[in-house]
Image 1: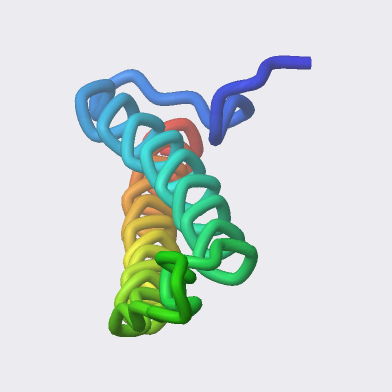
Image 2: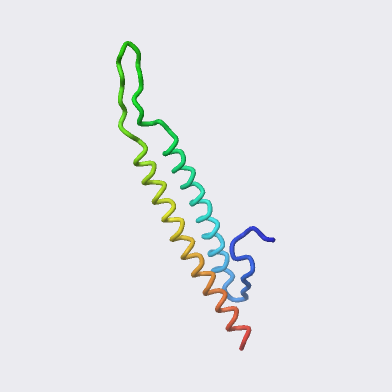
Length: 103
């Protein structure tokens, strides 16, 4: 079992495109993992909670959870778009290999 994306696709003419699609697929997996970690950080952090400074003084910071969640959502959406483009490139390589072998 090979751990890189599109490991069963073969080519003779479009090796560069296959390498690019594998790299984009790997990049999208990493980006999705990072987006999930950022989202979990935004959910479980208390960045916007009021802080007690003592003597009855409470400092309220603006809620920092919303920008973190927006960043996580954009990261996940970007990851899916990159993965779709990577799959499209791999499909082109696969079709090229199938049609050149049948001729």
